[in-house]
Image (cartoon, rainbow, N blue to C red; front, side, top):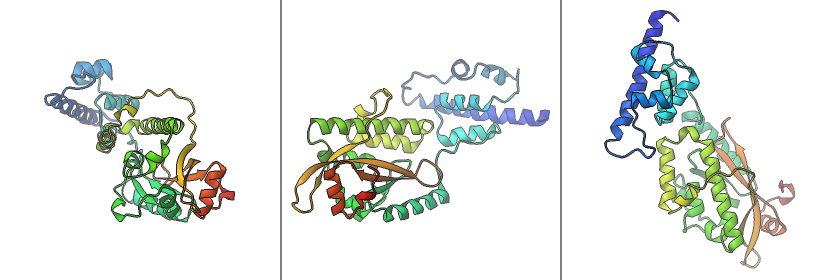
Length: 292
């Protein structure tokens, strides 16, 4: 890289960083920063990049390494777009964690077509946890109404917490099932946080947290991650077709990714015990082929 190019890139990168830093400072006027950050040049130097002041005064014009740029973006609480703009300004490839545009549309089309051909209860979920399709066995097993108003508007959070759906009440019918349901919720939230660590300042991520708060379920957001394997088997009261009675059955979820990324996913529900096999058979599911 020649000197003029190096100087030009130095100015661009420093301009991007300083613009973001000042933007964060200005927000402090309207609301306190929960972590007590002040977003000063000295603080950025101390917290994210010890040579930042040298860059500011021109003692060095060497562009920081890619990981350093990412560290600076983390300190500045950048959204995915802001972080990628900063990486591009520094001459690095952006971090593409999710599918967008036509690539997402094609992946969703494939996932929805595949879901409809699966003879077990299944749904399509995006990285924002929006549900983009439920097949007929899912509607029957979980008794979710075939209401077109739900299309594109239902989220996994709604599925678990909305009292208008029977899933929560039928998954928490005694102490053991309630404990199992809570463990599943906590494990799912922790897995979500881990998967989307780099997106936690994005608007869609914050909107999802607001959705959890709407159901007064914030206590599940702050449970510490203790690690270890969590039993993925769940229990729910399901209706016997012959008698109409509700009986407890056990099932597990299997995830199938589409489009070369973690999301969109097809979530498939498989029977675990004899009661589940009976109910699934009534739904027309070939339980002899299920991975139980």
